Length: 214
Image: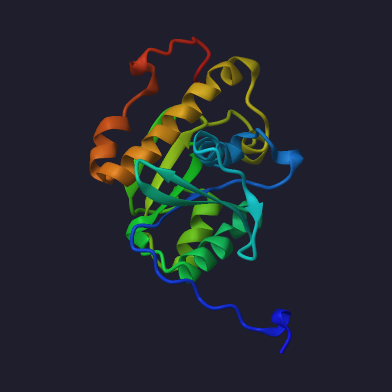
């Protein structure tokens, strides 16, 4: 039988494997938009680990890194935001990832720009990507890091699909870096400890641009 006709063996479970998913929309049209801040955070973790993303059969680009001795599988769904759960459920099932080892990073309009909110469980908060993940997994019981993008004065759709204004772009790398730190902290020390460390106004940490919040 030719090799291409053989069924590939299922991977052996990796008890320490953590799955980190950044939500966003694929392609250059959506690059650096507010809705893609989840992508940015997970890309930053990959950059720190010297890893590159590759396409996969799971409807997501994936990369592998080791952080503080933890094996991480990083994923960026390429299904567009409102179908993100398709990729997440495939990855969870194929790699036998328990939900306590899953962490999802997404944007949130109900949080001031740059502020982080970590939690385990809870609703989607109106984020369609998060809603898709919850529906596909049949559970809300996974950790998430939400990055505030601020609430718009006009159209919500236009807000999330627009790029950050210049004054916010100046501080965005710092916010993305802090969110990446929060992800690693949560995976290493637990979500409760991470909540105590990162669930506060980012302006308390020394950033003072007057136009930070919209």
